[in-house]
Image 1 (tube, rainbow, N blue to C red):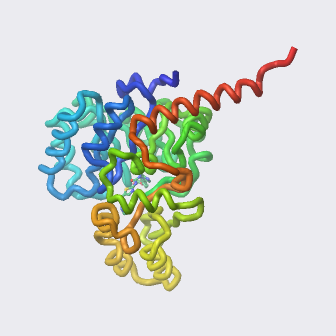
Image 2 (cartoon, rainbow, N blue to C red):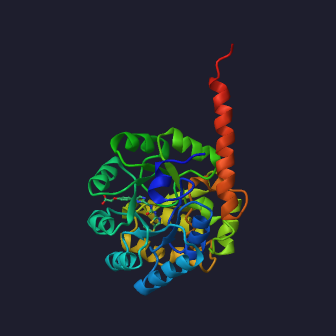
Image 3 (tube, rainbow, N blue to C red):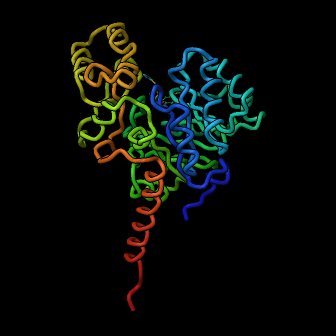
Length: 318
Ligand code: TUI
């Protein structure tokens, strides 16, 4: 059930990728997701010592023999060194975000690494396809963290029509209905971040998970638009400070000062009022923290049930 081209490409059982989340998705979460038959992804966005990435990759390999990925947040200046380590360590899959991974694709591809950039536009999807990407994650503005302008619903089918490589939908997906909807839009799979952050195996601070469980539909906001790097976070004290500065037209350095260390403060120290709690709009749907295996199996079961329900709508009466 639900085996797609993406499963064959990445050698996984289910067409589900765990989003790379700086300070949130470590070896422990990634290995749990891979062990459950999807693709676990270690985030490198927050890593400041390349040898720490090597150790993190080593930890995943100790915990699972299944395929996994490393996510490169392209604004991190250490990315060129991270790429060397990824090649040395034989990492099977690389996902990228927050930029154009173009110059790294041939290097990775030639070494047998599957490259799956996260994009938020047709232009970048086409460009990375030309440069040799194996698939693209198309991320809608419903997603948490750094985002683009278009919704998943509008962007996914447009990218599906614009490229020949498999498309993976991201942004606003956390259950079997979203999964099935993504396939209906022409995607070959989904990537989910917020849902996996609220898993038992995720080692983000417990306060972060509590905020997720309490969050409702309108509890995320987009901050940082004036900086050119819009970021979706939970509407807390920090978010209100950001929005106030934006209204006043404060100079960019002021935002930057406020933003430094904010994600770490929330994810590691549990300061969920003064820190940056990144979350997608679908956070309001999440009612319990559960094991990664249950998250995945519940999605597949719900999608199957919903598909059967839809099939009754097209049955011809005799
Ligand atoms: O990268 C993400 N999500 C992220 S990265 C991150 S860390 C961060 N923190 C504060 C500010 C900025 C980053 C937190 N969440 N998702 C993938 C993604 N990539 N979404 C949107 C994009 C994107 C946007 C513009 C990719 C490329 C792009 O333009 C590239 C170009 O040069 O054309």
